[in-house]
Amino acid sequence: MSTNPNILSKSKAFYDEFTRKGVEDVITTHYCPGCGHGILHKMIAEAVADLGIQDKTILISPVGCSVFAYYYFDTGNVQVAHGRAPAAATGVKRARPGSIVISYQGDGDLAAIGTAEIVHAANRGESMTVFFVNNAIYGMTGGQMAPTTTIGQKTATTPYGRKAENEGYPIKMSELISTLNAPVFVERVSLADVPNRNKTRNVVKKAIQNQVEGKGFSFVEVLSACPSGLKKTPVETNEWVKSTLHTIFPIGNYRDNTANAQAMFKKDPSSNRDDVLKALNLLDRSTDYKTSVDKTKFTDQNVRLAGFGGQGILSAGSTLSVLAMYEGLETTWIPSYGPEMRGGTSNCHVRVSNKRIGSPLVETPNVLITMNGPSLEKFESIVEKNGIIIVNSSIIDKKVTRKDVKTYYVPLTQISTDMGVPAAQSVAGLAAYLAITKVIPVEKLEYIVHKSLKRKELAEKNIAIIRKVAEYINSL
Amino acid sequence: MKQDSSVPRVEIRINECKGCHLCVAACPKKVLTPSGSFNNQGYNYAKYKGEGCIGCGICFYSCPEPGAITVYKKES
Ligand SMILES: Cc1ncc(C[n+]2csc(CCOP(=O)(O)OP(=O)(O)O)c2C)c(N)n1
Ligand code: SF4
Ligand code: SF4
Image (cartoon, rainbow over all chains, first blue to last red; front, top):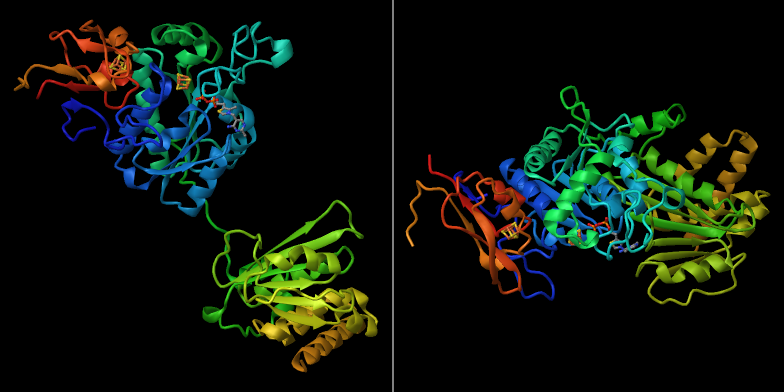
């Protein structure tokens, strides 16, 4: 609002001008005359301004008529794929716990394509505020049936009226969400008349205030008019919302635990070396392990190991991750394989860093270890410029064609088979990688193998393979 | 025009109004009315009859457009 309390005018949480792509007019919204979205936007803007949180508010706008909310709110904005607002909001809030995250959705977005996302965000009790506009129709696409469309209601896709036996019943999201334990606040409100709008203003503010106080998941369902979808005048549509929607979707509070709610900021689990090793039952094995990496100087390692199922690709990858954990580094490992077990292709992504890792995916590896022909063909092109490709020359005849990477041909299968342990060929690949880059001393790999293989004889053979590979690399 | 701040009033920006007339329906004093004229965009914009506004703000919260209505309450 203007700073003068005696004047009600355009909120300062809105932009002065609504500059939209390809549109001349910069003073009005794109909403139809009488649309509830505009009314709710004003209430949210007022609450954001009153609570003094404009600088730290991040609005997540959906797909639907409110897709353009980011053109209006002078806050942080993210516009996301259909139905995914609560998932994106989860990421934003967890990455920026100090921000106030508002997830805004229509009923097609939240209760049809996005049903999974909202249920799970609610169930996790994510610290966010959700505004759910229930106008009983898909507005943006031209008035098709929504999950909230009422029985008998005619829409573009239910020309005879919605029938329960064909299309099911209207979904009552507030009731559904309030069956879950985690949500702190669930309320259904309406914009259809003056008393309800007054109530809604307070509820909107409370739902945002809850988050300011760190109180977890707040959900507000807003019964709202879509005159265009309903093919009625704005005033008639509000009458319809009252006479029809109010009876099917009862107005009221469905949950209010705000008085007892503890602050529910999500905490990251400890990444302290000993805590991590203890949780994985590895601490006892590593009492005499001496870390050797200077963590301040460590360069990120993004490794892909690839071959066929049965070559030990996945376990070699996880061995690298375990080694990283012994060193107290951050690490992720994810396998990627087809439906087949042995006989299919197999590869894994391993990241090692001295900083927190955002995504476990390795899309542009700086190291590629290829154990068979198809994996070289498949992944050669994705390696980072100046990266490293290790080729298992016992199996792969093909040469690397790229000139902007460093290539090492090592007979990994041969060396392991000669020692009588073909299953160690991927560990041999790992040994080659460590011997080349020295990011972690290759002797440390011997330590891990020694501790993790129970059969002493097998462990010794593995260690011999690692040494052979290291010698081979040093002789190149 | 100099306004008398002791008298509440409402101002409707003609080209920000979409002619939905929710404000007309909501006003408890019935001092808003369709103008019968059309704005830039072609909407029959609402107008203030010129007197009788009590500065309650009900029209403001009924209007979907962020800047169409400004309500000047009585200065305390
Ligand atoms: C993946 C995907 N599927 C379908 C669509 C088409 N689509 C756009 S908006 C919409 C429904 C919007 O309805 P609702 O969420 O109720 O919002 P409203 O427009 O009524 O505010 C659909 C199905 C899309 N954009 N993306
Ligand atoms: S189609 Fe419906 S929901 Fe979309 S802007 Fe128009 S009135 Fe609002
Ligand atoms: S509610 Fe707003 S947009 Fe609708 S007629 Fe009144 S001033 Fe115009």
